[in-house]
Amino acid sequence: MTPSSNSADQSTESSGLTPQQRLESSNTRLVDAGIATIKDMETLRACVAYENANQRRVLILHRLKRRADEIRAEVE
Image 1 (cartoon, helix red, strand yellow):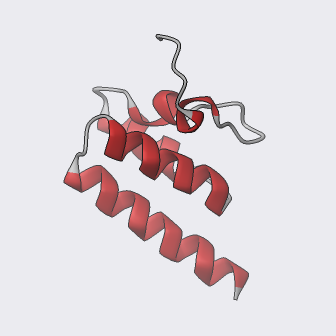
Image 2: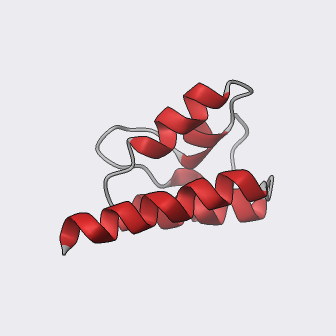
């Protein structure tokens, strides 16, 4: 990992994973697991910001949107 001044790179939740750790794997199962374990909107927003600033992978952004919908449904 390289140091970055981007706050999205540094944002972690209770699991201690950064957006980079959640999203930067060539193994799609690990990426899916990283997204599935997001429990709050703050972490999700940090992951979206990280993805937009780095890879901009449409499939990953769609998965993040789906997870956001799930988190919102849990709150209702």
